[in-house]
Image (cartoon, rainbow, N blue to C red; front, side, top):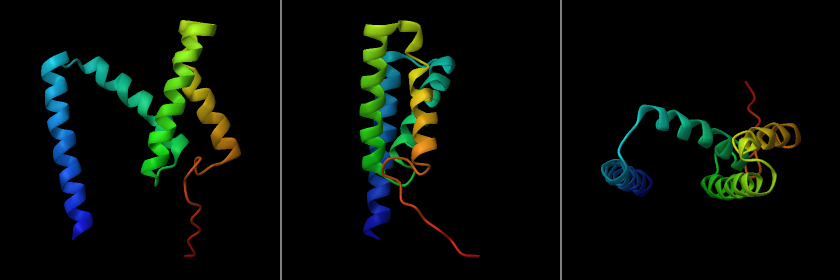
Length: 105
């Protein structure tokens, strides 16, 4: 019951923050797809079942994007998360903090 309540509170806070962000910045359909494409490598990097891993993955990808745009080339900035994604999937298929689950059928 506490677990369901915490998810409900998190959903309400996310909804309210999305509404406020939409009012302040405006909403554009093209921006939403770009955000979705940026979130995918972050979640896979941290692990699909780890919230803390997703936060750390977001910090890692954000820092890599910033340093790549500043030191290498601004055009490579959007490519770096996917290069890291491919490398992490080759080394650790469940992400950095994902749990290895083996199901027997």
